[in-house]
Length: 252
Image 1: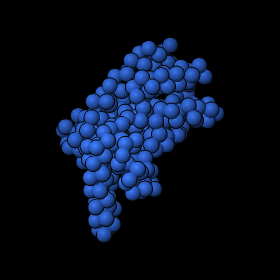
Image 2: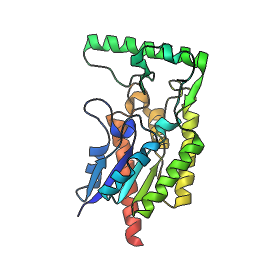
Image 3: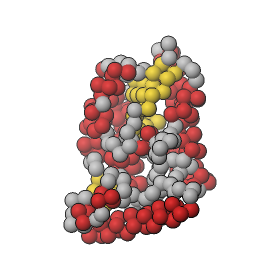
């Protein structure tokens, strides 16, 4: 009987675009036929989404829940509660429409329009931040409370959580976010120790790859969403963590 693994997270886990490129198939390949990987992530969601789908998670009866939350929660964004945000075009008021565009079309005339739109995003971000400041969708204390409560509930129901750090992010494109990612990842490590569950550091190896080979080697143009190579790195790290956990459980 295959061991079920559910992946929980935001667009980093679900993937982007119509093809939803992510690390699901790579992780499945690395783990082999004894496992079934089910991606339950949903773009733009925060840790609160875990509570919304908790019953659905239980229905799948997974052995492991790989959790990649904190990336949307911790990110520093232009304020939506000030004077400027209500005045910008409606199309830019969506969840991530003020953030840098992750990729461009291969068709040249579409690409020109997309680059122009990305410049508009940049200008709107700068204006809103200058006039109305920043916001964070989930505070660190709120994040810890919801996350740790969910971890406890998963374990009570016989599901082994695997806690993942945030990814690495370009602070020049997302000012202030990298420091928050470090704080959130440190809190995630604290939770893993307190609840005696595995913690997987994704930030450090992604950071090293960027330092060695540049952003474009493992990230999309927004320097936030991984590309195919970035997802290969993530899937291998997660596969190693899951297989290590399996070995540990068998020894017990």
